[in-house]
Length: 343
Image: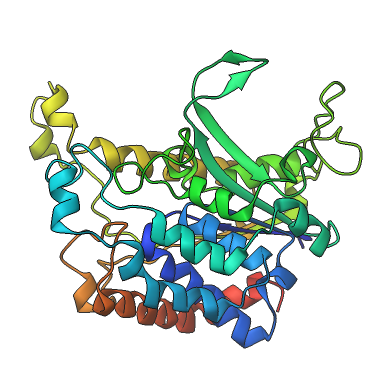
């Protein structure tokens, strides 16, 4: 049986209540904090915030409560702000990140990735994906690209958890670009299991740059075999509406006006499916478990059906429905999930 256990958590805004609830159910049943169950936790956007919370030893019920009680505050907007932004998101982000930053500071204070490494005695790893709009290579500006923060890397030891949380969750059109260069990791790695598996199996040794793994900074990866790894991947729910029916495609001679409606979802969903494909190719099928709730399923709460849920769900009714649905799915798949985790 695989011995190195990875937890991967997708992005999904306030729909993060779903993976948070699943983890709370697991924690309660086993009477164990998730950091006792996993060797590496990888997250993007809201999944990154959950991962940071777990690494900072926050209780799972606390993370669930944040979604149920703080989503309305985080995604707060006014008519004046809409007017200033040009009627919605046309000239500015839909929401300020001020309230989110305050909540994160209350939870994580001045903790850094180095503190995470020290607190877990280097035995647990946290990875969080963001996206850098203006990276540099030896002082030269280069193409924008993903950046994955890793508590096992010396070069990231001074990065504050609050800053990483805001970098990973700065969703385009939802929140402002953070620190003038970082946006949501979901634009490239909304399903971060691919990055986690790549790190785990990477055998490369860097001989010039001493900024990677403790203690000497030489190794970029863990050098494991795929057969030694198991991955539990948690999604944030899907409406199953990210497709384009043939009757809408017609001749397919599309330009900007036809594509603009689909590009945001296409960008996010394509990298989720690509990551899922990659992990399934590398991993034994018995060592990779993907749990994604479907809002159009027969047993889904009626209130979740019939519409696409955005990243900024703040209705208490919808949030509670997702919370209850996650508990329902967990109850049905409990034995399967616990068995996968070795219990």
